[in-house]
Length: 332
Image (tube, rainbow, N blue to C red; front, side):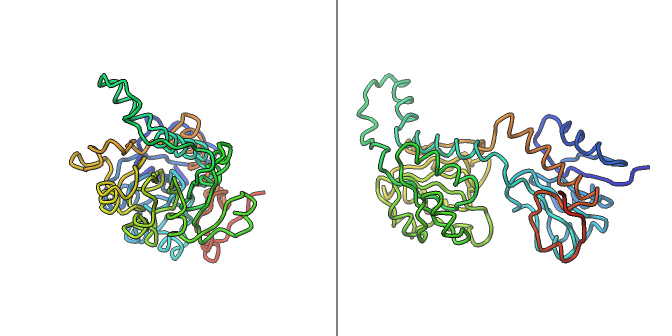
């Protein structure tokens, strides 16, 4: 008879073998994988679960209050916007994520979008394929050196991006009210207010998590503050940018273009005006991906669960205040 039940609420991966390998180190685990879409799906599949591994299914207050045995929810990724973390904390449920996941992948992808926007390689590629061998379709292009990159958020991924951009001679400024000034100083990054970053930057790269205070934080006021030759890149979450305001800014020529790995509605609606704009590069939420990053994510997400079931706080504990409700051992 199993001691613990672990339910994967939903997943996009071809195999869950890495997760099972990690959880096999815990005696008596029943491992169940389902594809939940709604609260009701999760409650039905996990009513007797001790642990959830979660990708996109909603882990709401209702779900948490309906799962009396639940001890831990571990999410595939850095963000925990699928989980009501306040409800989890109130009910003594540990929330785990993977904070050092895909730092190189996302920072590389953000810089690739910046480079593609700056050098207009996608536009030029399309022109050549349409039998137009003329560099003038890309005018104007500006030198990267001495340009300014503005980071919205200065967590681990944008910190990694900052060092890569600086290697190209790009100056970096950032907005992040939660980062200590000495951290920014050590990175040679100047901390500014949001609208100051928007006004100074030639390239803006969005890295803020999606929470209520960041939803639509880049909107009309911010686009009006930007330079007409500025590009905005988003590898975080689509709704951090007010998409209607972005489309308007692009249509009105308030900014030069955008490189978007994420949009408000995913997959993107076939009628979205962004699809018809030559100065917009669109990717299908892929910045996180490499074979190495995917394997690491799966193992670390499962390890959060294994740690809790073995009586330890996980390495990647998101809701630290849960320690007031739950007493576990600390890993050495």
